[in-house]
Image: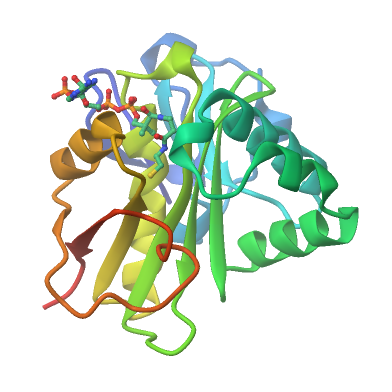
Amino acid sequence: MGICRGKHGKLRECRGGISYGPNQEGSKGGENLLSATENWGQVLQSYKKMSVVRQIKADEWGLLRSVCLAALSEAPYAFTETVEGARQLPDAEWQRRARSGAEGKEAFCVLGFEEALPIGIAVGLTGTSDRKVAYLISMWVAPSHRGTDLASSLVDPVMAWARGIGVYFLLAGITRGNVRAVAFYRKLGFEPYEGPIPNHSAISCCQVVLGKRLRT
Ligand SMILES: CC(C)(COP(=O)(O)OP(=O)(O)OC[C@H]1O[C@@H](n2cnc3c(N)ncnc32)[C@H](O)[C@@H]1OP(=O)(O)O)[C@@H](O)C(=O)NCCC(=O)NCCS
């Protein structure tokens, strides 16, 4: 059983975990990218023709590297990591990040695709000392797909993952002046975080910290 986006963008359940929506009935395109699963963490969402959102696979470190470099080049103002720094990272570090994002223990990495092309990413990261808090990092959608529901389709599985591992607050750190990101998170119900801001590298260099309560 999976969750799919239907005709009017509403989430609906679908058997087998794969749905291409009403326009793509019978389409086989992209099936090799997708794996049917009953695990919510690997649930697929189709948000419009041929665009899908799914969890990274452990061996997809090259894909992860490409999408992160694309994000850092296109929107350097939004991230504390630089594209130069990321280019210098050894393959082993990308392999570690991909494995971790696929494993779902310390991290959960979601990728968005248009056909085989990666066009978005969102990553959840557990807190190191406080396991009741997790971080939403590496949020990026290609400019061609902004203003669609792709960005929220990337965040939904991260929130489900965080909730599933017992997290109470999902925190997002935003750099100064990134008003579009702030507006996006506020739309999803993130609010200025009133708890003590944890000392974590995911948010330590960010001027704005928004939090979304996942449990009461
Ligand atoms: C942040 C990001 C993932 C959001 O995805 P998106 O598709 O752009 O988000 P949406 O369009 O759904 O939501 C953005 C909202 O900001 C609004 N907005 C756009 N520009 C704005 C501005 N200058 N000031 C205020 N609001 C603005 C949009 O109108 C939209 O609100 P609406 O849906 O009510 O009209 C995407 O913009 C992105 O990848 N940006 C570059 C990387 C980045 O900033 N990452 C976040 C790191 S914290």
